[in-house]
Length: 218
Image (cartoon, rainbow, N blue to C red):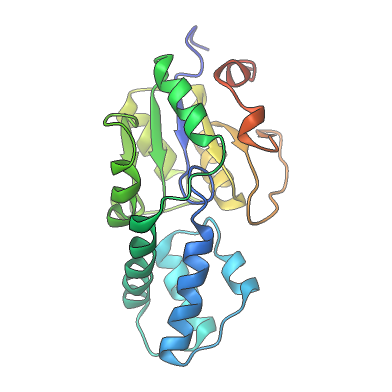
């Protein structure tokens, strides 16, 4: 392990940095109403942490609407982008931890399955350069739970993923990060997340600090 462990902190966005999952769920119900489909909160929760192409296929199958998965994804993005441009719903304590890490010189990367046009309003609300690298869902071939997103972020930062901490809120996201070799800090939000040897759980960002992250060094 390097002396400057963690070499980087890799952040999930939806449900972790920003509490945007309600935006997605609201937009899913609007989609069903607009096109005569059926939807439920259970269906919405099952999509938490999924990549958008998979979500589009799931919605097409279970909502029963006559749209392609690609059109579904674009429709959803229109709705959530409109919402995020009005208000960025930061998760309590997330900005404080992010600022503290940047101030201490710890490189931070954003690893999200949301597409660039949804991520842009979030990044514009942060000081320039807060995230040294940003990996979005439309920039990878295989999204979470595949390890490609986290491996890509670590490679762009020039660090070993096994020397990184990933912060996640979902099982699929945690799977992606741990498959890449990261130590995973899980702050559950909308859905419960099962435990595993490579996952450390925190109740809220109030329990997480740069010093606490350094204490996780194996």
